[in-house]
View 1 (cartoon, one colour):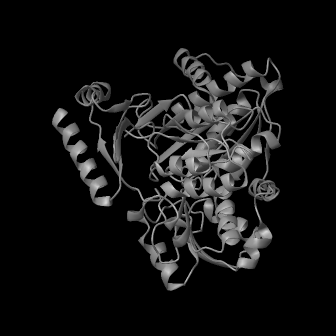
View 2 (spheres, helix red, strand yellow; view 1 turned 90 degrees about the horizontal axis):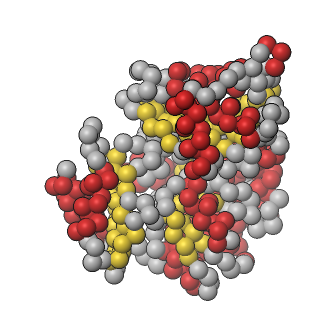
View 3 (cartoon, one colour; view 1 turned 120 degrees about the vertical axis):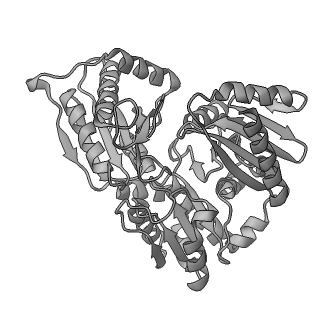
Length: 461
C-alpha cells in the first residue's frame, strides 16, 4: 500500500512487494545501511545499538530482522523489547551506545510499522546524516562481518523503570505534592506500551487510584491510535462515570500526550505543551519553540513571562534544531509532543504527565480551571489523500501565489497568518496526504476556514 522513506527512517505498510511496502527486503536494507553508517561514525570500532519497539503485531518480526541484520554487520545490540520512543532515547546515552532504532509507526494504524533512527545522543539523526544513509541504500553501499566478527545481543527488560527513575530525579517533579493531591487518573494506552509505562510512572509518583482502559500491550488497537477527540469517546465517558480528576491518553509509542479534564472534556492536545511551558516558565523564564502547525497559545504564554517564542518546520528534528539554536527552556509540537531539554531532546509523554501532575498539585487547580487560564483558540485538522501523479509542490505554490498579499511562511509548505486566524498546508512526512491545519478564535471559524482551503485545494487538483 505505501512505503515512505525519509531522512529519519523508513515507514510503510507490512506485506506486499519490496519498494512498495515495508517488506523484509526493505527492513534489511535500511538496517544494513544504518549499521554501515554507524561503523563510519565509530572509525572502525564495533558499534553498539539500543533497540526497542511498540506493541503492534508486526513489531516482533521487524525487530528480529533488524537485530539479526545488525549482528551480521558486526554490531552489538541491546534489545529493550517492548518499550517507548522516549525510553529508547533515554536508554541510548545511559547504555553508552552509538545509536538506537525505535520500531514503531507512532500514530499510524496497525497495518503500518517503521524504523526510526537515533544517533549516539539518543536524538533523531540529522538531515545530513539521513541523506548520507539514503545514498548508501541506493548504492547498496554496505558490507557484513565475517564469522569471527559477528555482533552479540543482550536483552535488557528494565529500560522503562530506568526512564522513570531518571525522570523522578528532576527537581521540577514534586512526587510528594502529587501523592498528597490524591488524584484519580484514567489511562487509555491503546493496547500498546503506554499500558506498561504510564501506570508504572503513576505508581512511582504516588498516584494510588488508576482506572485503566486498553492497557494490555497486545498491539491490536481498539480504536484509531491517533489521540484525537473523535477517537476518545470511551475514556471521556470513563473519566465522568468514575469521577476521575483527569484522563491521560498516549499514542502507541508514547511520545504524544492528550489530556481529558474532570468533566470528561478534551483539554486540547495543543494545550499539553502550553500547560507544561506555563509551569516550567514560572520556575525559570526562557525561550520556547513549537512547529508551524501549533497553536498561537504557546507564543502568548511565552510572552506573558517576557520570553521569546520561535517557530520551526514540522518534524521533531527541526524543532530540536531550533530549540538548540535559541537555547529553549521548553519546546515541542502541538500534537501533544513535549520536549524538555533539561531531561532529553525528544518528545516524551512520561515527562509531560509528571510535569502536568506537578503543576496541578502545586496550584490546586482542576484541569478545566487550568485550561481556562490560557488564551482560547480552536483548531481544525483536516487532510486530503494524495493520488498517484499529484504534484504537491505545484499545488502549494499555486496557493502561495494566490495569497502572496498575506503574511506567509514557506519553510514547510505554506502557512498563511491572518489577523485572527491562520492556515497551514503541507505534505505529511509520514502519510501520503496533504495536511490542512487551521486555528481561529471559535471552532466554527476554524472549521469554516479549513473547509474553504480543502475546497480550494480540491479545485486546483
